[in-house]
Image (cartoon, rainbow, N blue to C red; front, top):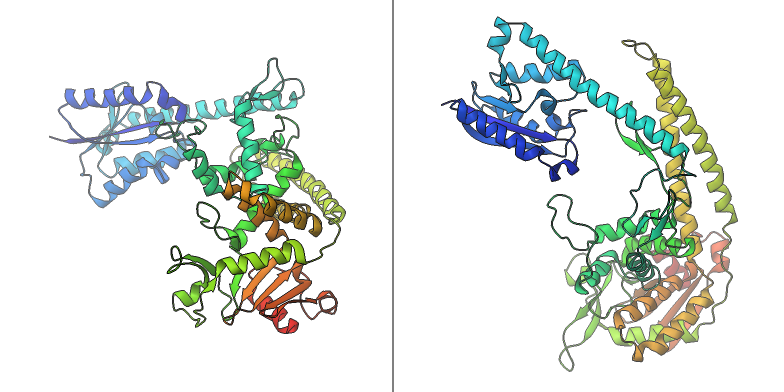
Length: 555
């Protein structure tokens, strides 16, 4: 009995809700039974397009081809497909190459909708069968190309009329289309949850994973089923990150298009402001971005049920510059909570194995930064960065317009003629300029967000005092200590612990260094030394060389 393998494909995930998969499976089973074939396996590309050949380069069809090439699928086997457009919708030369690759390997292709079959032998005997296949390939490609062009034209028309009618009713999960042809409104309980997430990141210092865990623990349903299984899903840190880093919450809508030259999805023109309802105000948005980057720069990680370690991401070892980690050895008198060098604990390039009592360090540290120090300063000026961003966006719009014109010039050429090397070079140069400008804008916007998140130092100190006063009566100790840690990190850049117990605290961008030992603390003002070039003028937490340099000069 000859062996048969079925291949099932449809292009969009939404088709999985219909009858396509069942119908294709049923036809394969019926054909195999009627023709006495052993239906061994079904290869399926569900929600995979056949237009660009992704199904046979990356999808399940590629696995079938690999098995044929390796001899795991024998010559003389049958490949059952509903029609040629299930196999491919590529341009005719590419479709023909795939077709011949299969038939020249000794595999017979069967199209189930009409019962025809194609093998190397019957094509050799009757070349008209190849003509039939070519016509089918051309029809499949033309159908999808015309559909794409119609959709593109329709989309362009809707986008041009965006002031008078919504371009699409698809919107973020916390919004829904408003009554009438324009606008969107909030789904209140979901929009409130978005605001809560931003507040917990920007003001409480929580990370994406902790927020997801809290939402799941509170049994708050995630939005929408899993796209693959259709089953109820839970909150994930990756979704929290996507939500917070995206600009949908600001009401922006970024149109996209498929680049006809590269086949990739890319932004199409500038974002459209105020298209969606603005759920998060820009000030909170920028503070959340800065908080997310701050966690990536060293303060992320598990914090326990009550945010036990306020010094996470700040405390480092004097000997090796490694992180000082929080170690809980159980209740007193035999146990205790300590700060210990993570490298020394693992016996890795550090001998500073001293266990420093955590609570003593925290109490002294909070008294120092909350009450003993007198901090003053103005909020930063962001005018220079805003001007640079505006200039870069103007240049980007001009480059995108140039790319559009060059691509139109390429697409308008007569069929069969290739663009000149000069024209191709112009496109590549313009695209590199576009990428460079987009990267530059992203960097400048990050700098602006970080700058805007830095309030005057005395305001953070006042917040620390307020949080300490509320600590004993707080019903959510984790949230309160998260907010306290966020305010501390806005002032303090580094806390370095020596084996002897002496602590060096670097604050306000390295302009002040505090030495603290058994006799008390004293401050060294580094402003003049920074201005003199003795140390760099921008502090980056975790920069071990600069940290040592600051401590050496301070001594």
